Length: 168
Image 1 (cartoon, rainbow, N blue to C red):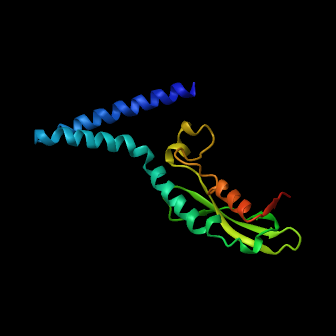
Image 2: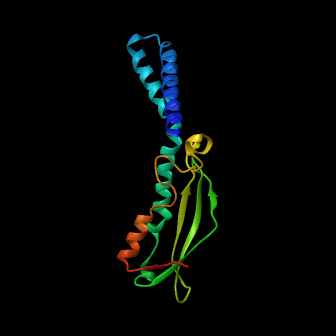
Image 3: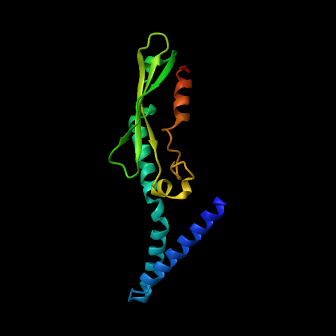
């Protein structure tokens, strides 16, 4: 049923974009430019629902690269066992789509000393996923996995540095 609703919505958006492009394109007086204007308007209208997700993906990746596990100094934790503590998630300002941030602290399992510290980011998705039925109750981004920066990268860093992750 959801697939059918998605298909109906997509066809309606496609038809509406074509109709608007046709009407606005016909207002152009120079016939050689009319077709180009119609195509340009059609492409812009089709991509409009995804613009915030596309820009948000690049903002998310830049935040992860600057403050995520890739930027953390793991040398103190090399060869040790660590436990993780996550801070409270707060909404980050200045991004095109809502992104929440929390601190990740990796403590030595025996002494409690903080060995690694970095930030985790969680994207809530673009307006299409937050405000329409397409999200199906889970407003995650459509175009990228926005739940954390890159868990695979974190696991790889831990493996290369022989860091054992202990669960509470």
